[in-house]
Image 1: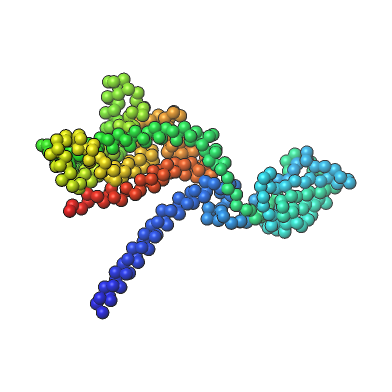
Image 2: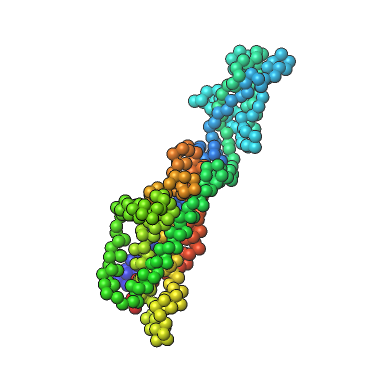
Length: 385
């Protein structure tokens, strides 16, 4: 009986864990899927319905104007205006229409309704209309009518084309690469040598220095940003360096990324078999040879793990970029550009969704390319045998 109860608790605990993981996966995946679908949707449909309804036809209340006085023709002593409420290339089916905004479903499509001064108006299901009156229409601007239409889903690449060309995202995309690649490579190179020294070299104050490095992990970015900026400005004025440059942001990201990199790589390198290092030293290998020939190749999982962390951090950074870079077109990064789009095109959701997905596409490629090393690099060194 006790064994059955224990087995039941184990199964229920495992089921709860799996359900929790499934919930987390859905919670993280659904917004990304919605962002991707919305980025390909037509502008008008995006503002009227959610992405989850984008794969099926939907009923939408809209309005349109008929032609004005310049569009009417005279036939058999009657004045006629014809046209279509759908734009060229659009397709849909009108179900209902009306002359009042509050009653767009007052009349069924295909029915002819009477208007003032003996005029009649007909709207067909394909969107074409016909206004007919014994007296001419005198206004230049046509009258508004409201209708309910069944709209088929429309997807387009126009959002991405607009984002990558007219909005300056393309140049910001290049600027972000200019910031991210060096700001990822430089701390990896420095941290790898430092981690090897902490793991396999003996020197006075090694443990104390490592504790100081680990303690830097808890220093908030916002607290250290201003001192680092003042330090860089002082050094830059002495060496005649520009105040806003890529060099400054590379050094800033290197400084902020080194504590985590050293901690992660040191734990991994210290877990490697000591017999390998001792055998190499017996054969006369120097520390540099041991590092380049043995430690570095074996540390690829840990290096890949930090590469993912650092790349994602720098790519998505906004604060450091605003402080160390200017707002010129050849310096503004992708996150800053998207922030400007949010301010100047707050209603243009198609631009924002396409721009946002462009910004996360590269990090996703990097993560999935290196994810097989990710877990191995994080877990290695956490348990000493």
